[in-house]
Image 1 (cartoon, rainbow, N blue to C red):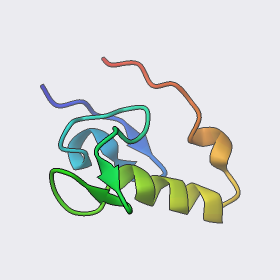
Image 2: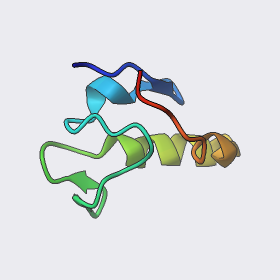
Image 3: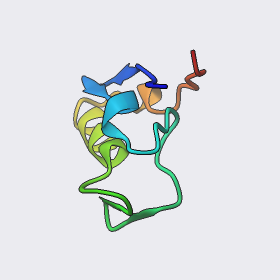
Image 4: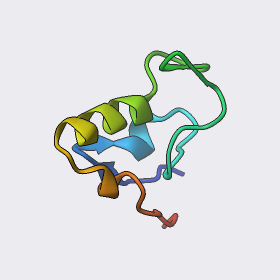
Length: 64
């Protein structure tokens, strides 16, 4: 099952290997995903912070 949810222009459902929809899991270390590459949620947070839009980061996203 592929979850589709765009946050700050990132397709987090596809970019996160664990399909996390509401922020990073516990496997993030220094911005890096324990599975592969940089955590998409770290990138989302950085982008929203630069846009002064962190309210978007705290939204709860329900699975579809």
